[in-house]
Length: 145
Image (cartoon, rainbow, N blue to C red; front, side, top):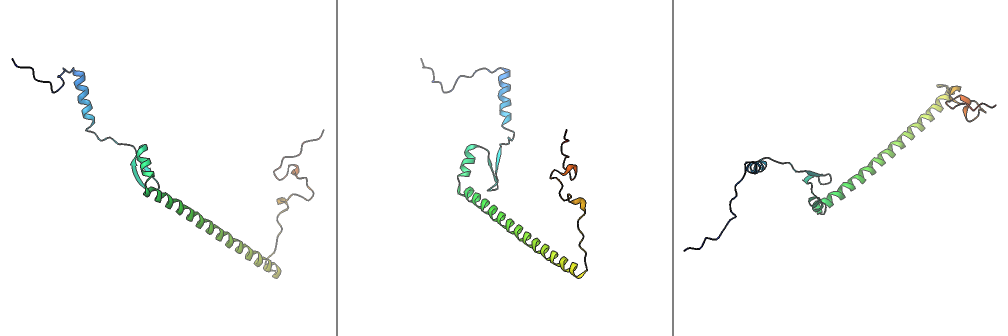
């Protein structure tokens, strides 16, 4: 008499058609490429897996920290340069206008130009009420009983 051999695997079970079909379909899914969400780091200009752990690991790295510092430093310098350029332009325009006024004054004194007052319709008449009485875009005052 021989003792039975020890079991090394689970006993086979019979599969129904539905179970066999489902197993076959699951195995098919691994044959197709599946896109994973990616995250673009605008400071480092690189893609990485969009998961909390991947992002935090990336953001704690020296490369990312250096890139963030460089990004803000560059923005500060650009903003400062733009402001200086705007100030220079404003200064140049004030100087051009000053010279134009001086030249016009000289031309009027020499009789080469004539100063013409703006049309009276551009200004309210002297002593006019501040609300305009219907003129100059303001509503007329309310009628008195």
